[in-house]
Image 1: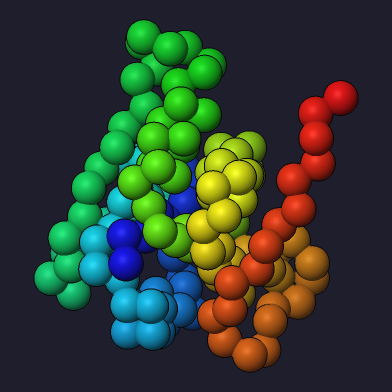
Image 2: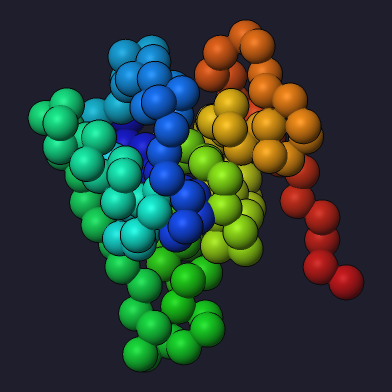
Amino acid sequence: MKTVVTGGRDYTLTNEDLAFLDELATTLPITHLLTGAASGADADAEAWAARRGLSFTRVPADWKHYGRGAGPKRNAQLASLAEAVIAFPGGRGTLDMVTQATRRNLSIFQSPSRLAACSGHARPNGPKPIRIPVLPHT
């Protein structure tokens, strides 16, 4: 399954996050990883994929051409290429990637660390897709 990894530029994947990726790699299974070519979670996921011999594609944002709109354009492109998204803790860009995936009805797997950051506790039952409601813009 072609899978996007999203998370913060300042976030470093933990051992728990790597174990989560290992579990998803076999249960989905992940056949190809897609990233936004950023530092932090993206770079750590690329290193994880390389260690596993898993292919990955980097899809960088074109900041010079699109300015502030580059991130959402890149996220839309990633969502169009993917079948699932794995989300780690992050900021606006991570939220936008999850929103883009929700709009396309992709399976979204939130890491235990993201769940803990968002709600104060982790989901005990392992990786399960979680749909995040998207409110209409007013």
